[in-house]
Image (tube, protein in one colour):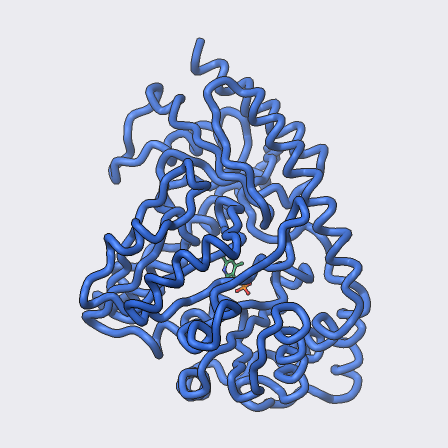
Length: 397
Ligand SMILES: *Cc1c(COP(=O)(O)O)cnc(C)c1O
């Protein structure tokens, strides 16, 4: 009954581990959950108030498909204020979450025969979304010693006459790695030479540590801005994952095509959530700093605890709220699963033996590693890491 198109799509592995952990939790087992990819903070009150006000005001009807003008203008201001990038409202679309904006973008930009370069470790949804557009994801491994970042040499080596696009995600989910402006400039030469379209997933823009500054490709030149499509949203920055508001900035013809697609599928994102997003983007930003400071403390803590486990190596993340340590020293105690992966058997062992939920690296295209989201309390981090250490010690005998 099902189409070939949907048969090749597996459920998101991050959501799969989460449901298994929740089932164990429901049966009374105390699970430390490092699986989940969302801030553990509550949406700030002034944002909630804006939504409540919208309901009271009867702002409960269809809105323009690609978002209300007020929100588009707030997003235009945000790009100017934070990124020194100038956009017009017609170069902005608001969708039902960043994921939805990306899905629409891929449908509009890519088709059969197109190749899209996806550096590993990648966010789990990129390859299936490219496949759903009938295009081919070209999975490009990046070395651990560059912090899992793409280099111009590696990029060049994977370009063919069919290459149409490239996805970059900085700070990265799952590694937390951040591209510097210099690194982007080096990539830009290759991108310009081949006129590649760049999808810049900036969703973790604000979650940066150690005084790092954020850069994306669009900022480097007007020519690059034309080739770049910026994905951003309120989910991660303002602890608003459930509100489903994401947005994209890029060339007006592409935004218009995405709006057409949206008009024939979901229509507008929720009216009330759009008002909340305006309050988030235009309102006080202090809460973001509080959240980032706490994430920075936890990153240092979890890195110290990982360093205390023999054989585990970890790239130091500059942003987001994930660490992606290399556990391959322990793979000798396991048999590969049916897909030939070893991160899955280890993650399953740690869930069953240590009662810690993690996401295996295989889902991110890097089987040597396992992803931890540290969007959980300091106390749970300490408990979880102690359990992992003990479970691994047990393996080593
Ligand atoms: C969370 C996330 C998104 C989008 O999240 P939405 O909740 O759909 O806005 C996009 N890219 C990455 C890398 C993410 O981690």
